[in-house]
Image (cartoon, rainbow, N blue to C red):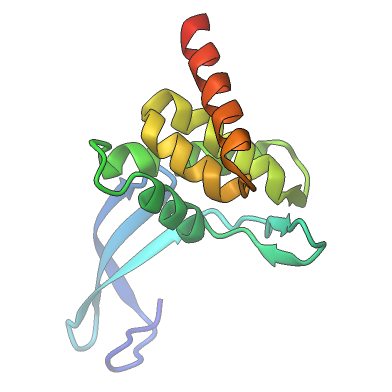
Length: 154
């Protein structure tokens, strides 16, 4: 690896450790010429996962965008960020394990709602109200009845 400071072509690894549940390796390196220390990350190169939106447009899957939606739904709720990170990783893993290059945004929304219903009911209703774009109070009440039925089935 080339040194970012002096561009010498040889560095040595001082320390390596797995992060992100073993999905990434963090390496501390030192230039053999100028002794500049820096960090590199090594991760598996993944095939891009394309999300097909409702209107037919396509965009690359964004774990950050998914995480922002979860954080927004759980705002001011007793849900740990670590829990949301786990949900985000689980959903991405499930999508990639399907072995397809494109996934419908509706599938992702349903996966989020399924997990949020188990984590926090208020966050679930918040997410569902935006995702399902409730047109009136009756649709909202129907969704709440489904949530109550789901809770009774547990």
